[in-house]
Amino acid sequence: MSLIRTSLLNAIAVLVRMLTMLGLNKLLAVYVGPAGYAVIGQFQNAVTMILSFASGAISTGVTKYTAEYTDDVSAQHRVWSTAARLSLASSLLVSLLIAVFHEVLALRLLQDAALSGVFLWLAAGLTLFVLNTLLLAILNGKKAVAAYVAANIATSLVTLLATWLLARYWGLYGALVALAINQSVVALLTLALSLRNGWFAWRHFFGPADTAMLRKLGSYALMSMVTALVIPVSQLLIREHLARNFGWSNAGYWQAVTRISDMYLMLITSTLTVYYLPRLSEIKQAAELKREIWHVYKFVLPLTVLGAVLVYLLRDWMLWLVFTEDFRPMLKLLAWQLTGDVIKIGSWVLSFVMLGRAMTKPYVITEIAFSASLVLLTYVLTPYFGLPGAVLAFAINYLLYWLSMAHIMNKYAYR
Image (cartoon, rainbow, N blue to C red; front, side):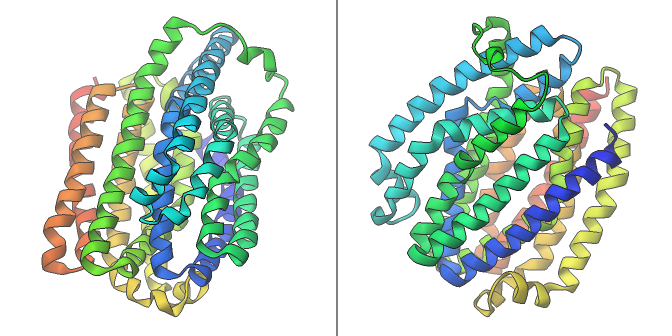
């Protein structure tokens, strides 16, 4: 499927997700405020890490090898059965650990033992959460874009509805519960969408685990695990640093500008995942890889710059639409955040090559190094620049990351 066609189909899901995110942010702004917004960010980072362990961190590998074995259905089925066994074992083990240590997790990550119940909700639905992740990875690898888009739309709508109902009556606790269970609920719909495809059958998930496939998925598990750990951990450390030095409300302003970035970059990042990553798995020649990278750059960079400029020009209107006047101090963070967004997307076009071509060693090293450097830059710059130092650190860090990606591509991928 072409980049343009995939982007157009994906734009439908992005539009729905963006509208629901607007509604979701408004709900959170009204019901939990800036300080609660920071706690929401802490919990989302925790869920990312937990899901990585619970799923075996293999979703990227499942997408890659499902796409790569397009002409070998038997190999695809071995990928799926191996992934299913690993995911089931991991999710059950992690669910048990969460249930046992739910109070410790709440106290350490959310700074409030009274919120420990949300981790029990997460533990109860974690296996379904992991099933949803696995099915989405398969749909993506099979390029079943319509089903993939429908599942993502369902996730957005369920999240909005659950958050509205629960946050309205139980405030911050209700909002956290909604985030804990949303994908578990959607898993049943994703399963129904998958069953409508002729190539999908339950028996493909109950075959024996394949040792060779397990080794192949293992390299992706390592890469995904590193990403799912170091990025949320770096964000947790930064958020705690900001809260400790500037207060939880200021940490909430930082969280709010990162959420703005997530919203307007949604079309770009989802297109890279839905089109670009499977496409990279199909490319065999260096010359073809260079052409594809340039092709993607011509599409995503102008679109990213346009989005960043529009967000900045419409920042006051956006504040009214998405947040409340309590969040106005976040606007002073926007310029450097948007600059960093453009640089980030430029670097991601190259870093996705490492995922698509299973370049495990450079990927792991750069993820750890630049997550650590982001925390370090934040610690160094915030004493001099205050809260804006955090977004300045973000922009500088991604510029250094982009330069390193260009070096790695020239040294490894283009040969």
